Amino acid sequence: MTRPVFPNLVVGRSDLAEVQPWSIVPGTSHRGAASCDFATRRLTVPLGSTPADRVVRAHELVHLRLSPAHLDRDGALSDISDRALTCAEELRVNTVLARLSFATDQLRDGSERLSGERLSELGNWQEAVFFYVAVHGTGSAREYLGGVRRVRPEWAKALRAFSAALNGTLREFSTVKMTSTQLADGSMVPAGYLDVTVRLARLADRVAGAQAPSTAEELKQFRRSLQPGGRRPASGTFAPLVLDTTLEYKVIQSRVGGGRVSPEVYGSGGARINRLLTDPQQRIFTRRRVGAGAVVVIDQSGSMDIPVDELEALLEAVPGVTVLGYSHRPGDAVGNPNAWLLADRGRRALGWPLGNVGNGVDGPVLRYALSLRRNRDRVVWVTDGQVTDSNDHPNEGLSEECAQLVRRHQIFLVRTLGEVAGCLRVGGIQSIQFGEFGRIGRKLRNLV
Image (cartoon, rainbow, N blue to C red; front, side, top):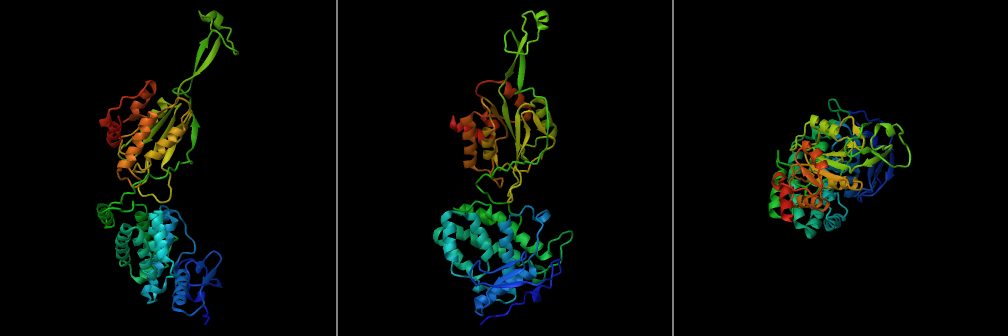
């Protein structure tokens, strides 16, 4: 039996959503075969009368009633991934359905166990977390966890701990607050979405960005991180390098690492005849000697605390070299810039960020610095040696990776900006005082 659908009857919103006719497209209760498209005002839903058809149809109507038609990704949403927001909104809608006594156990199509197995086989912890958020509280969740448990039992334990954290968060909100479409103060986002969906999405991004627990101790730390006020769990990986391309530059005179003009008694052009009288050696020709350049990498994390005036002094002292600063915001999920060219062979930035608290991108930034070298350019790394992952946790494997780069490419290590100019004048291989460079120093000592 075909059921009529009247989307305009459920609009009743308090935000600025337009009340206009919607078109109805027949769909099914299978995953991905029903949708609510605000851009085209098209509602694709099953029109049958089975329990699954009814609850899927209700799910899409709740989206139409509650979900924002348009989202401004600035402000409160700027640091949250799109995938986390999408899955968190699915969780809010399903929770509302359950509180309205709809049979959310019918929200399954039999593919969930296989999805859990496939994601686990691929080692895709991030998507495993997001998918679980989307199906949490529905009939799909148990089957999905069963598929995960079959391949990676330790992941299933972590997701169950995550489930408890999701339930605890949802219990904090009344149904009235969860379904509010009043615009939040100073925002164009409905209050229910901002209070509930955004909070769930932040939690999802935090867990998805963590290293999947593989031991009992790691699982214990993971559970502790889910507690209120708990520290963000370790990721075990570097963040991708994101270079800031919005900086503006000005041209400066090159002195160190640039060209130097010297008089010669022979040459091919540009003779200065007046030197026949003024130069005892009658060197009337000139030759430009180009010295070895350098790439200076500056750790601008909180532990380094590099004052702006020291950065200014460095760029004044060595304007001819390339200077690369870096610092990653722990847990960043949207790809904010974490590295910037402060100077690039005769150009310097008019201004630059002061850092994002954490390291998080040490390995990728060193590799990028090595790619910027020309000929005999030296790479100098201003660092305390405290390498961290993308969530700003220390990691032995990542420290080893950076130590290998330092040793293989003879990267010079200095603690302060004031030591850089001296490094550029010294030849040969640096004699490193291992104790001054934290974890990197200890790793280098072991490599000797």
